[in-house]
Structure formats: C-alpha cells, structure tokens
Length: 419
Image 1 (cartoon, helix red, strand yellow):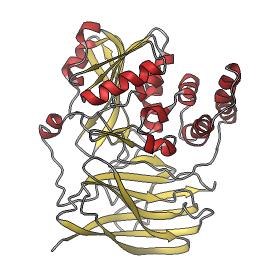
Image 2 (cartoon, helix red, strand yellow):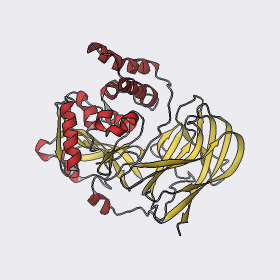
Image 3 (cartoon, one colour):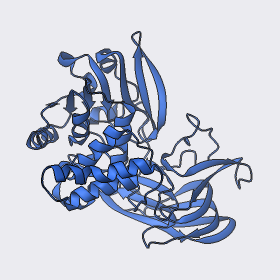
Image 4 (cartoon, one colour):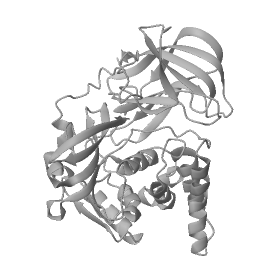
C-alpha cells in the first residue's frame, strides 16, 4: 500500500553511542534463541546488526521497539529473491507496485506512537504486514487494512503462519478506517494523503495519537497528531517520502509532479529549518547541519561531518522522471572538502541518483565521485544516463560512510531530453 522512501541508504553502518542500548539490543536475539534451545541463524544475526548499527545510531531508543525490531523476521514479509536484502535499511518491492517500509521508518513511527500494552491500534498498512508484526508484541490488538487484495491475503497468511494472533487484516480503503472496531487508541498511517482523512480523525479515541505523512507526492512531512477535545493537535516530526495507497488517491492529488521536468527542491538550502533541526525538502537526514555564511550561493549551505568509518552522513530527495522522454540528467553542485577519506570500496562521498521503474524495482544507482581529499569551493558536474524504464528517482548526497567534512550547496538538475 505504501512505500516509505523510494530507497534509503543501504551502505554499511558502524556502531556509535548509547552503549547501554547497544549492549541491550545485541543480546536480544541470542537470548530469545537460547530460550528456545536454538542457535541464532544468519537472519537473527542480521537483525541484531540492523538494531545495533542502524536503528540505535539513528536515534531509536524505545526498549520495546528495539526488542520488537530485533525479533520480527522482516525477510518473511518480502519475496524470496529479496531475503538477502531484508535487513538493509531500504524499501523493497513486495508486488503489485508496492514496497515494504525501511526498518528505520518502521521503528521511528512505532517509537513516535509510544505503544502501550493496552492499546488498540489501527494501521493503514504497507501491504506486507511487517509494521503490524512489529506492533503486535507491544500492544493489545492491531487492525491492519491493506488496499490490494492479493497483498492483504498474503499478509494475512504470513501473520497467521508466524503466530501473530492479535493482528487482524482486511482488504479495503484504509482512509475510511475500520469503524466497527473504533475507537482506536493509536493510528499509524504508512501512505501519504494531502490532508488527514476525516474518518480516521473520527475513529481516533480522545487523547489518542496518530502518526501520518502528509503533503505533496514527493514532499511530505511526518506528523504526530494528538486528539484533544475532539480536535487534532499536530507536531511535525521530520520530512519523509511515502506514496499514496491507491491509484485514485494519486490521481486526485491537487499538486501533481511533472516527470518531464525534474527539479531539486531547496537545492540551495536557503529555506529555514523545519521543527528546529530538519532541512526542508530533504529526508533521511544523517549528520547534516545547515551552516550560515560563506556560501557560494545565497547565505546557507549544508555540512556533512563524520569521524567514524561506515557511519551514514546523507540527505535524500525523491522525484518523478520519465525515462521515455529524458535521456540524461546533468547534476551540478558546489562542494568543499576537508580531509575526506574512504575506508571501504562501497562507502564514499558522492552525489548519486538511484532510478526505479513503474513497479518501484531498483534500476541501479549512478554516482559522481568518489569525492576525496581537501579542496576549496568548486563546482562539480556529473552526467547520469536515465534508464528508459525509469519513472521515479532518488537523489542522494553525502559522505555515505567516508570520513571527513563535506560542504555542499546549490544542487541543480539539468534535463537532456531524448531524440
């Protein structure tokens, strides 16, 4: 039903900070397997690394959420050909043009809900059943709605086979909610409307909370909403990227992207910070700060700074693109480097674009770089060949596991149309 992030950073990550939480998370899977008299499998160990190296360094601290993420077999909720990628921090196709949310997004949204053992939760699902499975051990009941019948049937079978007895699945329009089981203490929406659907507002209990991404097709903000005296009080959490759950919802958007004219939103970083820390227009922000003064264009630029090899430092932005009409994209940007070094062949400072087809299958990533060493402000350019099947793309900028300091400003896309 939804895809959180067209694709997120799947470079290797390293452990950092929160030593008590790291130690706690590191023993979760092993302890569970010992209780069952089993040795940990490769998937168990991959989940442990996911918690230690991705979730905790990214700010996930809720012990119950970490425990659920360490125990939930994400590979069971994706097609077999993607099992080897199940514990990377990336979205994966699950069929019917839909994808499963990245582990970080699932953990972040679950933590924001502050799940309690007595909660009855409505989830407008991803189609996979994974978010519902993560919620299952944390709350009393989970009601999940999937819009695509074949995905709902498969999710229901998977959840039943794995023993999630407090999760209930149905096929339907998630924006209409599930009125016969309302009110709900919590609602989690993993697809993006332009506005909060009124039926969900009505079905949220007084004092209850909702996590939902709202906004334009490629420019959304994740909100935490609390119902007080029948009205919603909102708190912006961070920029994000989700897709609508139906073709109708997509068609009825008032603001539609133009795949023949892709552009970078806030590429000069002049817009003020959102909620005090997040850079507008960009999501999956890691070790990126907005700096005032000495910018080659305008007054502000972004600085990535990392001292731990393998740790992510990045910004991402999605956009629509028509590979039938656009043959090439040229990217231009100003960069400045200070002692930038790479320690792994697949981890380096870069400007990159990932392309995806109409079913959101990955068509590959193209990179500019590696960018290394020390240099003053200079303009860099790169030409990216657009696959004919491409319908969506993801612009990635940052250190991506390299160490040092990278400043960037005035990022632009220039279209080279096909013959």
